[in-house]
Length: 568
Image (cartoon, rainbow, N blue to C red; front, side, top):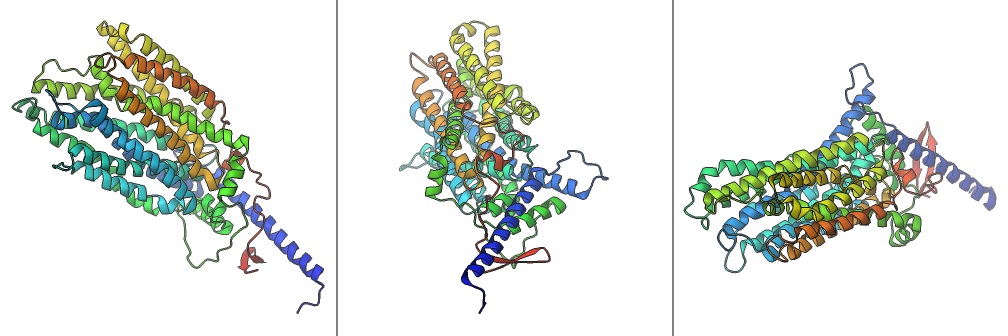
């Protein structure tokens, strides 16, 4: 028994705990600084140190693995734009057959966004509870099953094929939704401060390529079945179109199949290990290994030492977001995404309808040749929208995101979109009076696609992955993304209900005017957001970092610079 007095023993114990707290706190900040300052050289010559090339290739791997999921997500979301038209030719009513606007077409297009909303909330929360690594890949498995099942769907007396497709698209949407918070969080937590915006933009730009590929596949399938379509006995007997939409939707699972292995083997982010698992020493070792070798070395026998750090709980969540300076950021990210997705999905899922309304997708004849021509024209029109607007917009953002900043790009995008939608809305009827006017409308439509991506569509994905603390980053991103999908659902339901007021496609000009109003509101919600360029995630979390760790939950000994843990 120690002969020291109780006060002396307590002082000694407090001193050791305080010293260990200081060491752990310093080790945490040093490890985070290594991530934030990691080099990334696009064309690193062999003479550069191995640490540069290893860090570079690990960042490339993270970017490609996350992007593969977004490519698949976008393909599945936007393939239904043309797929619904194909399905209508086979299972719709009338002559030529088509889906009912307010029930069947709406059900097919809104089912996946509804599932996505639930997936974003669920996986966002789970990623903060059980870990990014444990959930990463699960969402792709759901997508693979749901997408493959859509291609094999059939109907019977008890349930129609449209009903079956709606169920499977909702299921697929849960997986698609899970990809948003997971990919954003993983990309941001692995990225260096200087290049975080560009890395996250590259991940998100896969959305544009997924959209483009879905349209390209639809075009190829349409051309491949051209002679079969034309040879059909009548426009109410388009059996070969049944092959076409199944091929189009079913191919959406292939990118997920190729990416699933890498998703499941991607390591846990050091920030999760450090701030949520509270294992600072393990996280520091992980960072050191990945920057030097490009991979993690997992030791199952390593001693786990938990630090006393802020932990996620309902009370802590209320305390953090109960402060206006934090709550306003969540409101800003959520509403900005909500406003943007009203326009992005309101147009993106209905571009075939808009092309038909301006005469671009209308067949010259009402026979099987006309059906082929309608599908051909819609595919070509959507390819133009993707190449001329969607894809270039991502790379304009990529070029400026880390120099100009997120907030200026988002403000500029919402402002320009407000003006463009006003012109398209109030000038819609005048532009339809001539071939040149229709060309001008297509040009304006391409500009809206460009400034959605060189604007709020990209930044609303990036900012929520940066501005919240690690323990709530994925949850808050999921809430923000789900708000966006709520906007997409409202847009799709509203589009279906309003489209034919006054006659077929007659309400489109007023829909454009409504979209202009929501773009204007997005300007004001953007003002609630901080600028995040060139700032560390910890600085943006609005929490004091010095003394962030309150001490160890175990008593420790230091031997040769190594912290060894024993129970208090």
